[in-house]
Length: 453
Image (cartoon, rainbow, N blue to C red; front, side, top):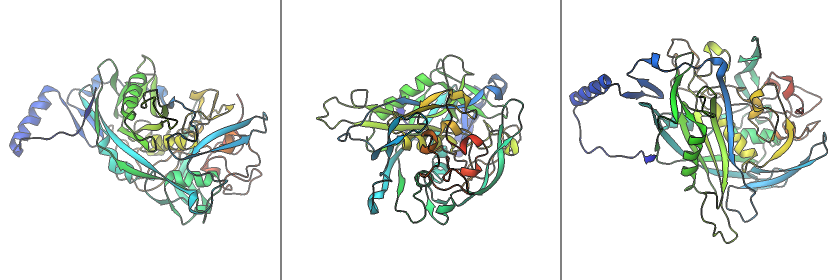
């Protein structure tokens, strides 16, 4: 069930009374929250530990729609590209202004982003999106930063069965936007279409904070798990959780982007709680599919939306810049926002691709910019939210935010040479980069177009 988080306390308690009540709650085994971390009075030994080998980082999509020129939805444009590998012309919708046709101030688009923090009650613990609201608003997703350089980026370390995505040295990131103060998605889109430097091209998000909503998770729809570093998180059925998000977005403004924000809420697929974990999804719903009335008079609504969870350091990220170093804080949010911008209606198809960096997605023909590079990222901005040690005493936090790298349209379209995107940091035969990180991405498969299945 969904409940409004707004409530009024009609009685003022003395400090002594509060202390007595807290003591009673603790003796009764009730849960308390401290910042973003869920704490339980009961023994932590009762919470299962998920093996790191099973702790996957997954994302998903929901729904899909084909908008018409009269559709009420987010500002977007339509383009087409010929894939030289198979000769097929692929069409696609993307958010914002058309970088190939716009001029002057018409090239700058701002989308209203309606942020709803979710307070999740599960198995006696509380995971409150309110706790990470300020840190999210201060993150590169909404705050301005210079994307000229980054202090750290993902490197490929040695691991028994696969490359370990560890912290490596940074360097030049988007050299042509040096000195420009940009939001993350703005910097990403500008680099994707080589609209850097003094270009008027922008895609910005204007955040609006809406009242928090409380979601109570039934005992048969979710459990608590803990990582190998002792971080406790919610593990909820994806089918049940998706229904809760879809119920919320039926009241949203179709011209806005609703963002549902959680902390340490991850999802499992099917009945196996260890078939985990989905950390975000974006989706689309059209009129007649729970998005409003069928009586649209030719002006139907198509609602786009996204859910993403703030990921506490130590769930995925190993200590001291180890494996999955970049998989923390806004990594999931940056993934979903980028995919929303490049595939807002979840209907952009491409020639099927496969990459060893993300085998969990298999062979897929969807233009999802974050999937190929999940867990690959870089450091940006200053993160002050709960940067202390993990519960087991190790240290995964490092004082930065960790946006994900994003694959660009020319990578999916097999465009070579790439005359669409910002130039690579060092001269290359392909000219333009295939991901936002360009040369900083350590995998050769992202310094050339995608390969087939």
